[in-house]
Length: 176
Image (cartoon, rainbow, N blue to C red; front, top):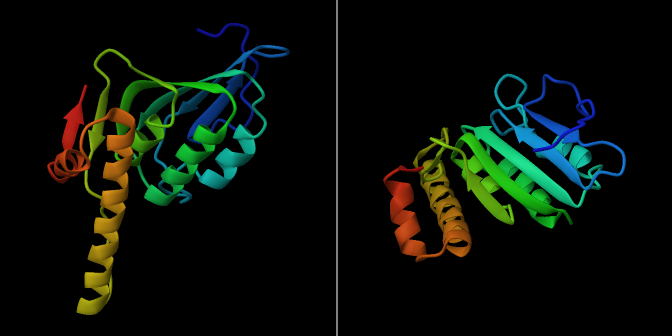
């Protein structure tokens, strides 16, 4: 646990909050407690604003606490890669839920800790479509490619076979 925390580094209405133990501390904490995405009326955690804040973290150890139902796959992938490329030793703590793309963000940690009764949910990529039959077939192919990409991420980080993870995604699987 961190002590002597400084004030949050951005307004409280964002879906994430960075906390630094202040001064020369080797530890910082980040809470992601909202939907992932750049939409003003839905997602509170955009990759663009997140990148700016994460770039200011100089601590050697970063704890990321998650409680998110997911959101935009593209924003989540960018956030996961930003965390993965940060030089800090990153501990991910799932406080409540890491669902959908938040489960991919969870994988970016060097260490992953599940809180008591916390859950992780994985599923196939989904979207809302518009267009003619050809457009929708193309969209379905894109969703399959994205789901394949995510299944590879689960297999790489958690172990196991890609096709096993893909089947778990198709079934919408919950873990505790």
